[in-house]
Length: 288
Image (cartoon, rainbow, N blue to C red):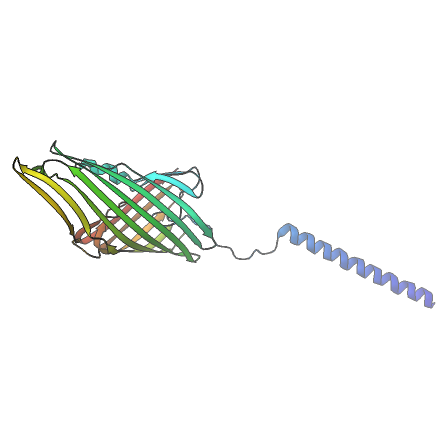
């Protein structure tokens, strides 16, 4: 009798253990097929590319009002600035230009990019005066994702400008050279309200401006020559502006619009206007 009771108890335990193991396997299979709830991840959103560390992407082409850009890789892109070419329509100067973006750091919420550009201005005026200008801005951009929908974009730019020319002194030309330097910084605060719509607040200031060094010579008549060697201070020591705006960032179309107050900086060259007043900010681009 005891032996039968023992066998019955052992059989019952075996059945319970088998049932428990089968239930555990079923739960594991269900977890594997359905998947556990993933940890929260950062939402993938279209990125603002103007004045930020973000690039257009590999084998993508951006055609915009302020820049034409082509991505050689995810971390390198080349392009040119249409406004500098278009300046020929309103002033007597042609400015061929080229720029290169290189993203050298991207980890977590931090992205860093270097921008190097070159502008060569060719001046013709009144058929006699001629001159040239070389401008080389070098910038570093840092984009910091402070929150899932909040970014802070920082910029530091060094600008070197060298101009030289020859011509008739009376026709606005001279045999001389002009050189200038500047250090600027810019900030863009971006708050994403929907997947494609952001509010932006932008500020820019020229921290330092080197004295404008120049030397020139000209003959005013067959018996008189003029030689000039000196320096000049900029008309505005620390130009600045603040701009509020909006950004619409669709997959194949970006639109940025804003308005503010201060001194207007020429896009690309970042040369400030000497006049204080209304500052527009408009940019649109098609991304292919």
